[in-house]
Image 1: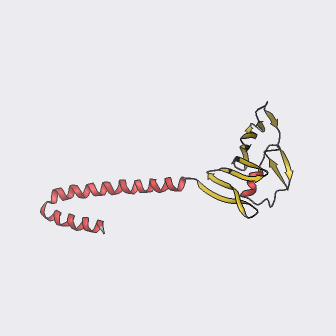
Image 2: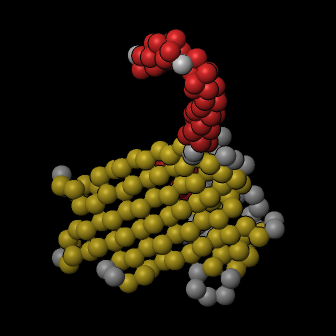
Length: 182
C-alpha cells in the first residue's frame, strides 16, 4: 500500500520537476537494493541461530510436587549441547534440599566435555568435569586428575533425555566414570 502511494506521489512530482524526480527515483532504486540486502542478511542471521529444545518435568511425591527437572538441548552447527537442572525439596523426618546440574557437549557424535554437580542440604556432594584431551578423557573432581581411555564416548546418561538408546547397549556414567549396561 505504501509503495503504491509513494509511486503515485512520485509520478505527480515527475510532471512538475523532472530532474529532481529522476534523482529521487535513483535514490529509491539504490535504497531498495540496500533494503533487500539488509533483509537477506537478517534472514540469514535468524536461520543461522541455534535450535533449542526445552523440557520441564515435575517431581511428585505422594501426589504433591516436591521439585522440578529442566532439560535443555541445543544444536549449534555440528555441536550438540545437553543440560539438566534439578531441584528437590522434601521432608522425610528432616527437610532435604537437593540441587543437581549436568551438562554435556558433543561434536560430530563425540563427547568433548561434560560436568556433573550435586549439592545436598547446602554441602557439595559431587563436582566432576570430564574433558577430551587428544584421544583420552581427563576427569577433574577436586583431587588429582584421572585419565580415562574410553575414547570415543558417544552416549552418556544425559542423552537418555533426548535420544532413545535403540542401538546402544552401554551408556557412559559421568558420576561413576564407567560404562553401564542398559
